[in-house]
Length: 265
Ligand SMILES: [Fe+2]
Image (cartoon, rainbow, N blue to C red; front, side, top):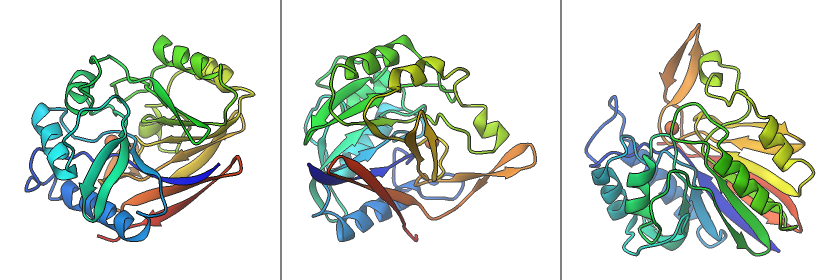
């Protein structure tokens, strides 16, 4: 069992490539990241995952535009993979998780029309003997421990396979009080649900920042967005531009390692 995949996150794409967000082209950054992946990793990874905030406003028009950009024509079940063809990627399998900017009903009907729209996207699949679990902490800025998510974790515990968790929301502090206020109030039930399981790592977005921490001994990996990131400015939060990151994840002989790649725009 040996393979690699790439995580990207928080693209905040608009309904047209010519639309700028505060003067910044989220579409240009998204394309640059995918082009970099195509040129450097396409033949060495099994798939790409986006951990949410695919679009900014959560409208049908935005998703339709994203599908067009990515050359997605087929219907699919959540979380994919969909086949994407863009910037040198050819039919690359890609999974999608919703973030707090992705209204679940609109996200489902545009991205995963093979499924009935759901309020939460808690799903799992197995790839090369590794169980992948997608957890949904809800559609708000603040992460909430919903029963549906705990039920998904409980189903996942039935398998002894090494497990990787993908989700949008962050669960460990980054040190910026305003941003850390989005952490869940009580992680007790979540911690109990992952305790003593063979979880190789937890991968998330939301805080738009690359950082690492641990919870219950499990490594937790945050990732910088392809759009703005946040910097502390006293009690407020400053929007700042930094080069986007993507994370390459290698799974080999039941062990996990990752590397960060920075893409200059
Ligand atoms: Fe975001």
